[in-house]
Amino acid sequence: MPLQPSETAFVPFVSVQQMMDLVNHLGVERVLADLAAAIEADFRRWDAFDKVPRLASHSEVGVIELMPTSDGEMYGFKYVNGHPKNTGQGLQTVSAFGLLADVDTGYPRLLSEMTLLTALRTAATSAMAARHLAPAGATTMAMIGNGAQSEFQCLAFKAICGVDTVRLYDIDPAATGKCARNLAGHGLTVVPCSSGEESMEGAGIITTCTADKQYATILTDNMVGAGVHINAIGGDCPGKTELAREILLRSEIFVEYPPQTRIEGEIQQLDETHPVTELWQVIAGQRPGRRDARQITLFDSVGFAVEDFSALRYILGAIQGTGFYTNLDMLADPDDPRDLFGMLARAAG
Image (cartoon, rainbow, N blue to C red):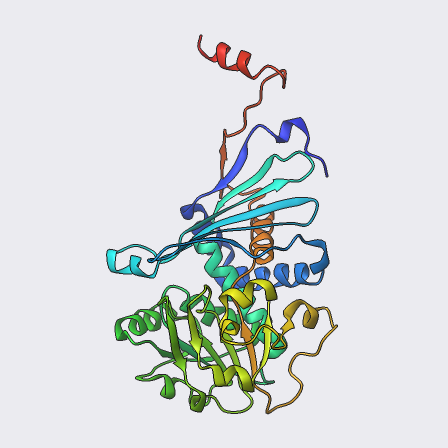
């Protein structure tokens, strides 16, 4: 629907505090479930979106990225960084913000923090994928890597997939302790573990979410048995992986957008001709997900712009009629659209 003049003077901005207030007001598990539904709905209309690999500026210490897309009516982008070294300086590994704009006018409709929102949408996407790919009846998940994303992942799998037990492991015991404390009172059985192997005992779902920017082997081939679902979300840029190549060769691999995942995901270890299935095809019923109980399914997730678009559009709807945003005066709006200088001159006095 075209914007009316009365709607163009201000742009709603959702700050970090307002995002926290909104999520706490609605409930984190409800927000995760709502985000999963919004993302899945957009995956069902995948062909409506412009799709390009994210634009990345790499350095020796991290990456800064822009992630744009449009469905022809709304345009969205996210700015996001990934700097693993930041935690040693008391800073976040990831910070982000995003914008939605009206395609018809080009005017912004929403500006929002996306550090918290990215953690929420990443977890929602993980659990949405697992709902289609994980073994039936899986109620235990190994959570390997207990940093900033881990609690969101655990709660998303509880809310969306029915997971009731999470087995935690991190090379830093303090991270595991932090995660266990934060999950207390959320209705999960939480089991801190002393090794990756221990964390995977009885787990039908394995989530890996580590931060180091390196070719790492968080899961070795002998650690992964038949019938599990692997949710690999830590490998998300060139030169950064978590899984042994042999695991990939034994798995049915599902991805968001192959041109991006082949650059950034676990499948950067494989030949470009190695077959993968796009997740949207499973959601739309065009390709099968899990086919049998012994199959290893792997969601090689690097995050894609459509998911951010879905999250921003969800937030735009969720803030309506609330106080969880601030109107920003960020659009020049002269009485005569041709008289921008006159507006400036009148402001002087």
